[in-house]
Amino acid sequence: MDYHIHSTYSVDSRMSMEEACLSAIQAGVIEIAFTDHIDIDWPDTAVPPFDVGMLDKYFEDIEKMQDKFKGQLVIKKGIEIGLQPHILDECADIVQSYPFDFVIASVHLVGGVDPYLGGFYQGKTKEETYEEYYEEILRLITSFDQFNVLGHLDYIKRYSPFPVEKNDHLLGISLIDEILKTLIDKGKGLEVNTSGYRHVSETPMPHPDIIKRYRDLGGKIITLGSDAHTPEHVAFRLETALKEIKRSGFDALTSFTGMQPEFIIIP
Ligand SMILES: [Zn+2]
Ligand SMILES: [Zn+2]
Image (tube, rainbow, N blue to C red; front, side, top):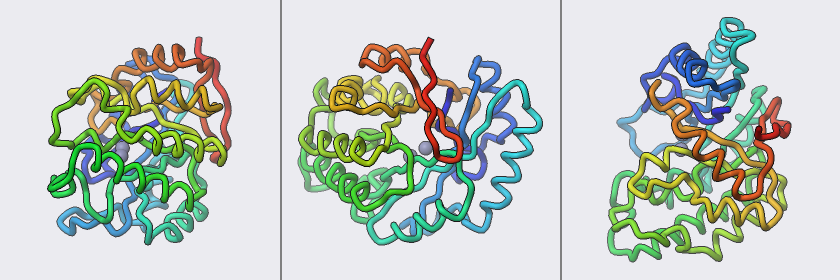
């Protein structure tokens, strides 16, 4: 299953829904979720946001794919919703107003600043940047309920200018534990995002030690996704990550229909 795929509905993707489906089938994937971006109040005005008014069309297009690939590929209606403190009500309204199968909550901004733009890291130690990011996640998932899994937990590493070190995944570990416990208490899951293998750390997001920690703390809900924005990244390293997930003590992945989880035994 590939539960994190961006089509042309995301400004940073040029992959059509059909290309994504064909790529998934070719890779032997049996089920995907389209999870295009909704990032309300995005600070970079040069980037046109996903217009919420497009959601009806988004659903129609996914339904077309469901018809077209019936019997070959199960296709779910998902979204990756970018959380910020001042837009949580709006985010909740969107999720409740549409029949989503699956919702990833992601934190792409800290204090309104995109780590991608670099300024976020200025004048701070590596540890401070990680802690600031995890504090933001903890605050947001504590006050937001309309989601199924937390996306790419250690996204902060993706654009970090600091040299990558072996134990980076332990930076801010007490905050990570709080995040994992909060997810478990709320019945929410953790996403394993294989785009981390494309990063210099060559580990999934989050690191396998953190996946295991979520399990040891009592976590059960785990999804697997490539975060593909191009056809060649669909299903990227899913098998490697699946082995890590199994090694961490999970015997099942989670699929979602109408935001309800179903456990799929890992063969
Ligand atoms: Zn994301
Ligand atoms: Zn994504």
